[in-house]
Length: 316
Image (cartoon, rainbow, N blue to C red; front, side, top):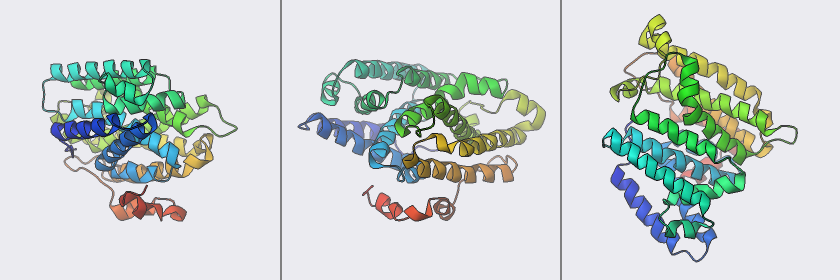
């Protein structure tokens, strides 16, 4: 996917948010500025996820926007910044240092004053408030480092354990803490459901982006699937495995707090539409599949359609 933002645009946003948040009269007002910046990141980079998150309660929606920005920027470093791998790794190391500083310091404005990146100054608030284990984000950054020096994966187990765990499963864990559990469920059960959905989403993305990833020197289709079925068959294999996990995530939706289930269900339904388009094409290469907006709209909760125009007007 061609990035909608250049490195200069990221820098411009950082300058603008830091100025506004740094001069805010309170930490709460500073965090509001960071949230606005995070929302603009989500809206620019993922129309599908932006739409489904509009069905979350406002406090949880704002936290998810901060989570998204915290995973999007490192991903952009390794995917789209036109720099050498060594420089990408140096930027990721600096980013992790900023994360550790953000955890060490109290207060949004205090973090900004010491040079912590604006995204991390806000994300640390979510980590603390939601009780997210700090090690999860370190695992995510380790996966991003692997993308800076990519290697193929022998089979699906290796792909999941060596890469998808850090790139997607722990992100699902972040969201499980933000969403909360139902009264009858444990966080362990929520983790299992979140892992299924995280894997499914990642496999769908791998299948959709296979041609672009190969142009970057990456191959996420497991080597044993390529050997047995060729590249198109291997892409279809990823979509088949994703379909299994979408179904499991749907069956275990009840482990999450009731006020988050419409958004999670919409996420499953919207991305499953994309996954099934890939399946029906039998892994056709050279085509970047997408879901028409009318079909996306049809997968959203019918009793909450009124949120969509408000979202695009910036009211949600």
